[in-house]
Length: 158
Length: 93
Image (cartoon, rainbow over all chains, first blue to last red; front, side):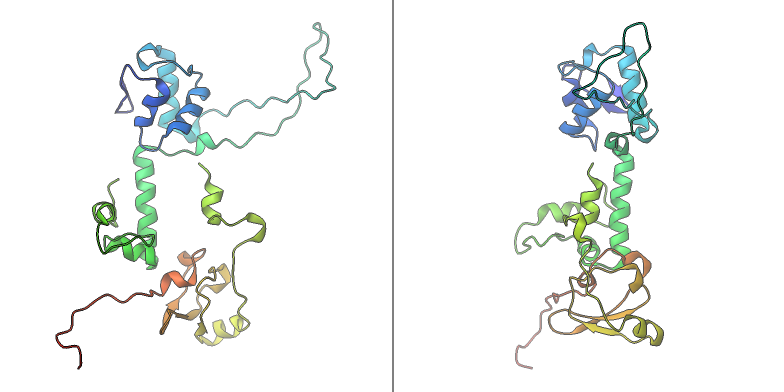
C-alpha cells in the first residue's frame, strides 16, 4: 500500500511499516498509531479505508491536524453526578502536542539543508567541515571518515 | 521531537546560556573597537551584534564580526584552531 508515495509493506505491523517514512521512527510510529486509533498489532493489509484516510490526512500536514481533546482527570475525592444530570465540563489546559510538530520526508530534508546552509553562511566550524566533506563532530580523519565523505555536503540529499 | 533540548544544547534551562560579561561592550560598539578575548565558549548574545571580536584560536587572535545570524552560537565556532597541512619542499627554509 502506498501512503503519500511511500510504500508500506502489506504484511508488516503498521507500527513498523510507518518507519518507512523518512523522519518517523519506532517511537513516533507508535504514537501516530495511537493518535489515529490503529491497534498495536494491526497489519497494513488489515487497515480499512477510514484508517488509511486518517493516516494520510495526519501525515500530509501534521501541524494542521485537529487537536486532541483534553479531558480533566478525576481527583480521589471526586463524586460523579447522578446519571440524570449532565456531567459538568471542567476547564482543562490544552496539553503540548509534540506529534503535531513532526516533519517528514521532503519537509525534514529541506529543514536539514537549511540548517547546513545556515551554518555555511555564518562561516562556523560546522559549516566549514560540511563544505570540506569532512566529519563535523571531531571524529578521526586519518582513516575512514567514509560516511562524512559520502554525506557531508552543503547541498545534502538525505 | 524534543526541540527545547536541542535549543538549549543539553544545558539545563535554569542556568541559561553560558556567557562572559564583557565590561567594555558598549564602548566597543560605539567606537568600533575590537574586543580581544580568549573566551571561546562564550555564547553570542543578541547585544553582541555588530561588535568586532578578536577570538583566540590557541595561537593568534582571529577577527570575528558578529552578525544577526550568529546569535546562539559560540565565539569559538568562528575562530578555527587547525591549520590545513600544506606540503613544503624543504623543511629548513
